[in-house]
Image (cartoon, rainbow, N blue to C red; front, side, top):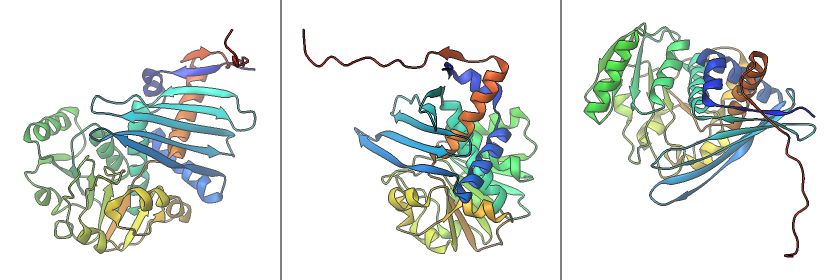
Length: 321
């Protein structure tokens, strides 16, 4: 029985980039549409002042892999891990440190959604929020849309200015502007991405022009919201990576039904224009599985990662001696 492998963050970063992740996630969604892959229902529990424990997972029968990802999101940070097993034998395939992987996965899903749902001529993107997910989100939109201009807003002027300065210093192939309000950021946007932990919705219908794609990725638990009810009501197409989770956990949708992104991808054609299209990202374990599997395969090929022995069973102590 072969050893499993432990991948550190550095192993993931060395073997998989965002474009790899976009392609891996899109292929996993095609498998889902064919019925060869499924996502485990997301579970979470909250405690304290907004801390949350999460568990997600998925199975890809075609690849013969099952995986779970779990993490505790606290004010002090998080340490997510993905665990992969052989789908036929149940043997451990690997454990992957998954902070960078999570950023790749979340960005990649937005990249896939933007590839199929954004206006065909997407020139201007608005980014609301400048936290840890913001840069991968923007990079993902840029990877699939030929952006000329990006407008950034955060309610914290220092964070906003520092983020814009970083973008300018990194040499991205688009102009970068700093907005002083949500409406200023979104007024000319073809794609709007919200990446915040807001509890009070801030993006309303008058701030969004016809034909826009809104990628809403921040509010994945019921106590959070980014979109106002009038904007949600205006959306004539709502798509999610997990429609069931969106219905249960995204309170801002107010019960609106969503089309599965896998269905859109399987259709094989860019979706026709709507007044406003909403992509509600919830995060699915199948995407973590797809990227973690790719990272493990490439790490083994390249001699990366640390081997770990398969767990050996031991009889439990049923009586104290």
